[in-house]
Amino acid sequence: MPRWKALPEELDPGLAEFVEELRRLVDRSGLSVAAVADRTGYGRASWERYLAGRLLAPKGAVLALAEVTGTDPDRLTAGWELAERAWRRSETRQDTTGEALRIAQAHRASTAPAPARAPGTGARAGGRLPGDAVPPGARDRAPGDRWRRPAVLLT
Image (cartoon, rainbow, N blue to C red; front, side):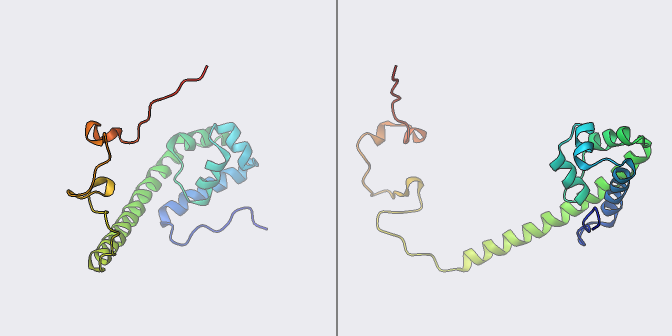
């Protein structure tokens, strides 16, 4: 059974190349992911995400891995900078896709018929409309105080 799972197909090629380089370093070191985590000061779960391509390793983690594995930190930093640009590009694409989904959902919501409302509910805060009854003492409280109750201290 291979040590590493296949990287996601949608992963940017620049990022995938960097993740493969990190995997090669870990393999050559002979260390487990848990040992890499112990020696670098970054969590095992974090390293698993970095090495699976689900999260870009922070520069500090990459430099710590370079130190642990005896790798040239300048070469690894250069690879990290390219991967970071690829990561930002992919985030921008995801943000654009997410924005398009939000716009489509808002459009669907605006064209859908309004649900029937129960009597006494409305669009204002607290569900009250101008003519609705107001509980006694509610007019004396500040808007943010409606859920406050006096504290009881038991000793």
